[in-house]
Length: 308
Ligand code: RRO
Image 1 (cartoon, protein in one colour):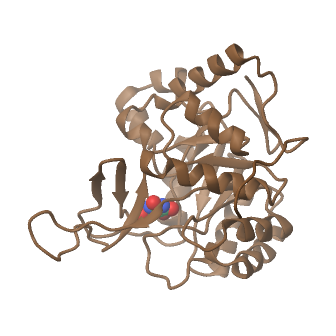
Image 2 (cartoon, helix red, strand yellow):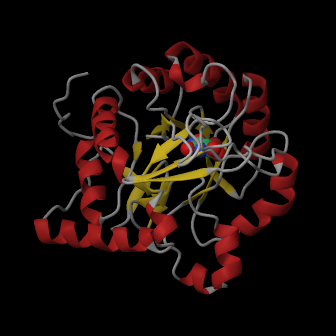
């Protein structure tokens, strides 16, 4: 079930959502067996920032009936640390590498894009304009004008494909996606997490998460993801990486019917690190059994009715 995506030939349409699968830790735990049975057709790495970050104070996770809230806050080694320590290890994975980057200004994003644009190990870049867990005032990706200005700044810096990761925490993801596409994005990915909050179970009025609020993911957001992917598909012709609470091949198929070309498994990988492989196998079976021979694509796809 090979899939063409941004000039890459993927073995199947299932990738990971950034930050939900630590391939370096998994390799330590499972050894080379991980490479032989790698669960994803491309690997999207955790967000990298220019400078190293400790991340948010604990607690960083809250379990919900339908998923979880995270307030991780982008802990990472920073660009230099990533290039020295992570990139060589991630380059050994048997699938294309997509590096997810985030900056606190356009200039910072530009520096990251420039640096990764030069690296042969990197197949594509994902611009994270949608992290709900840092206090930067406005999230760049919540505003079409800001997103357009960011693309204008970074598009000329690399020939590598740019994927813009959209936030569901804005009034119109369709407007932001359209701005991204018009200003040179090669694809969009959605949804990042929905901003959420939980209180301490025994201390009234005390927020549980160290960061105060966090991002909701898991089955609870699946219906939101479907609607937003359909909304964005009605606005742009570029490829969409759809994600949000999917747990099975059927859920992946639903996201593709809504308009996704590639689907990312996120929270489900915490329950089962091989979930991506299972979802890909189930999706394949569904497509074989239903006689679907072509993935829904930008070519000739009917938009699904929605209320946008
Ligand atoms: O690190 C995080 O807290 C985080 C990020 Br960068 C993101 O994009 N989405 C999310 O739910 N958490």
